[in-house]
Length: 391
Image (tube, rainbow, N blue to C red; front, side):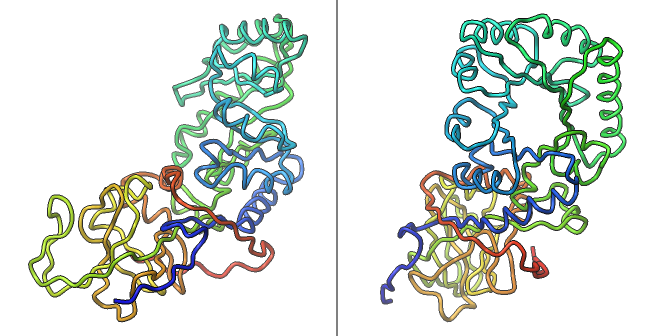
């Protein structure tokens, strides 16, 4: 079989394409949703859910984001000159506080002791550290309980070098309406208690992507969309209610095509045995790249707009696809692992179902050895109907 010239970004064997036009489209949809009086604070944590924070953060700022959300100091340092206020939504570690205060990060307070350290460092640097207090309304994990809010807020007001600008909460399950509304009620009650105590906190935020769509009363002053800005919906039925454009495509090339007789075993642990003469395309992508073992014998890929099933166990570096029905697959043929090809599409939702997870786990797990390229589609061009996805 002849070796064809490999034409793909940076000559990587596997690569993702990030569509900045889709980012712009999704931002504009959220602006339409919340109106001009509510800020959008995009989440760019976890390298922008695997999309590349340095690539997408400037686009968010261009589309009106005055604040960006990160989870760690290191994430903030990577985009420190972006031109927007950076919120460290996670728990700041004591050793991170000097640099975080020096950078002017907005810091989250989850318990009083960390506030003391922030205050001491702010005074030492002759600065004022802006903080937001996390209220645990039923998510668990980080935050102070609603009945503790007034005491903790009063404590923060008494600390030098601290400005309590905001309070916030985190939904546990936006698709559970009853529980989400209960969380909102607790949040509003906590805010009322603060007002009764004479503590005015000007900024309030609660919503992620899904809750912003489902509960308009949760918009408050800021929403914090994450997955939605990258085009992924959880729960999946939100896609029909609030359509968005997926930002990422993931592709690779074929590195070998082989013919096997009936009864051949393919891959580790012999999890697939051919039932007919079978032509197999070997793909240079595996679980080290984020194409996880759970996709084995379940996922499909697109080649020239047609589906080919993954066969055999996915290994660290390789996967295999059954291309018996294809006449034109050769070394160098392009394969779509995630995204559109022709009239069909492999969605992150589809892949996440194979793995028993959620769509943005798929994108955040894509490995560092994957090549990257950027395209910029027209965000104002009417989006075509998404193709029906087969599973």
